[in-house]
Length: 204
Image 1 (cartoon, rainbow, N blue to C red):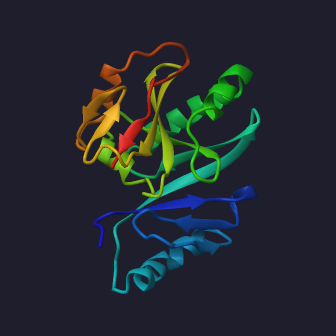
Image 2: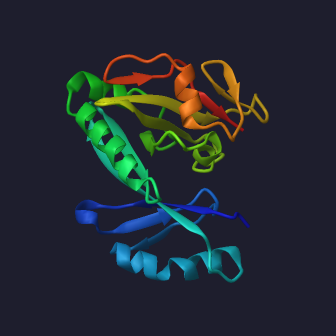
Image 3: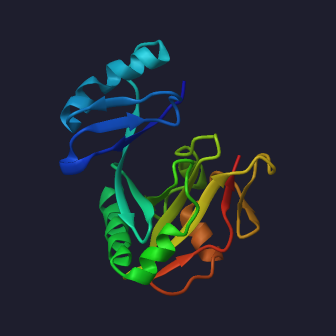
């Protein structure tokens, strides 16, 4: 059983009709009308899914879905000790999405199996392993977004690659799961309000 369970919570209009999934709990789809109801029964649902007693260490990741520039964009933000810094990344993505050309660039990034372009609001201390733990292993894809300066964010696509066992590659350079986002940012050349790494991040 995983030490940390990343629970991905997607909310509907007016922050109601939520449902939760988790890469650590394949097949789990759990829905409730309100966040309070979802949280109240989450431990019992996980206990039933895993066939064992809790309590379980859970990190909530909240998603919002937007349609723009002919595509679907999803933001994902973890509610952890870095939540305020993640909110700044979320705000920067929102500002970028407000510009037609930048919105088109955001939705041009790699999409998941549902056709959604998912951006994880990351911070410099996050690790490659932390990002990888949020990926489904069935060809899932997400995009890392991190603030690099005032009003500037850097994004890098992340996906599983079956051809590079045990390696994480960004712009053709390998990284270990313990590598921090700050180390990756130092190696990537960026420019403009929103910049994207040249090649996908590969996880196996």
